[in-house]
Image (tube, rainbow, N blue to C red; front, side):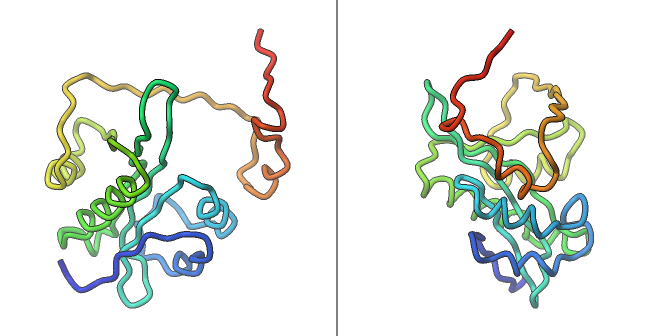
Amino acid sequence: MIDIAVKLLGPGDEVVLEGVALEVFDGPVDPALVRAFLAEPGHYIVVAVDGGTVVGFASGVRYLHPDKPWALWVNEVGVSPDWQGRGIGKAVLRCLLEAGAAAGCTEAWVGTEAGNAPARALYRAVGGALDSEAFVTFSFPLGCGSADPEQNESAPTRAENPGVDCP
């Protein structure tokens, strides 16, 4: 891999995501969403930085179930096309997995499309084992939140509103 800095971001690191190479993320980085993401406990983002520009990242969420130990869901790994093939995806993913392990996660998992050969090769190269069970995704538009996380800050938390009336 080339000589770049790999860093796990946290609150106060928002400025790091002000300079991002093309196509690292799916769209433009929103400063309000960056602040909200970095402030959220259990949300992780590792970046690869060259000369002040983010050229790759891996993100994930630490979560817990009533019947399972802590786990890390790897949400996404992205590397600018100009920087692909240099070990950056491996570096950020390894750092993300190390952060999950340090936080008590016993397993990490990631999903990708069956035809996404580069992602599948990356996950294998970092030690991932292919699960033979078919995986499908369903989306549910909830329509109850705002894209602006600061508007959602006033939404009640589960502790403030533990009951939800279900039909």
